[in-house]
Image (cartoon, rainbow, N blue to C red; front, side):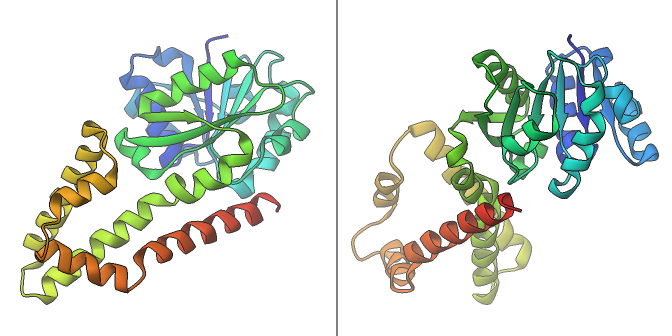
Length: 266
């Protein structure tokens, strides 16, 4: 069964479908099920794919991707359980929900793969953490990685580490956005026009990220390469350390992790 049914036509569902189309997947095998009929029709028309009611979309699908809000997932899975194929693989993009929740609502033995994506998926630059459920085989995991690689990078982790992945990569873009926002505001306070401050900071962030990715150097080494003794960077970093930046980030990640655990427990 080659049909891929994406349940949910929001931003994440749209991003995945767009990535699959761009990667050359047969549009006749891609079907979206979306509660809003107008949204489903718009996606189908723009991407050249099929739209269908949820039960029809799932029937005959080899892969079922659940891309709805976490609070809507259980009811949706219960709705499609009677028509899901015995050889179908379910991929959950619902943040915080354990594979056991899906396995309990689906036919016995249905393989489930849990994925924690993040918003750069909208630009094909996602970081997706994947975990296999009780019944998911290596082939199921490989299939999920193949699909998600069309919208970014993938990393397989034990499901026990999903809350950490949520705290780092799931919530992580917001941390970087806050840093960039703060730097821009500081530049404006020092007399720069906002567009100029924005250009300086955003391009600096992009360049720094590429250096981390492409040089393979430890971030501490790259930081030290920028920091001349007694220079401007050293003065700035001393202030950040004085204000406890490392502790602040450690506490932030811990808080996000703990909240993810709470949400997963219902």
